[in-house]
Image (cartoon, rainbow, N blue to C red):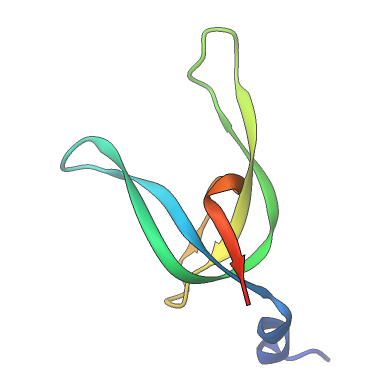
Length: 80
């Protein structure tokens, strides 16, 4: 059986930013992160266009505090 600590050693570290909606300013805030664990690629979509929804690639990243974020693919960088 594989232990969680062993799996986290194999996962790639990354840094970058993600967006989160700020209810005080009613705007999206760009939040940087210095280190996260990349789990895998995923898909998300935006349904605000008049021609229909648009899908885009996201990364599924776990932050050191356990929070899981989904930054867009071009907003992360893999680190050693």
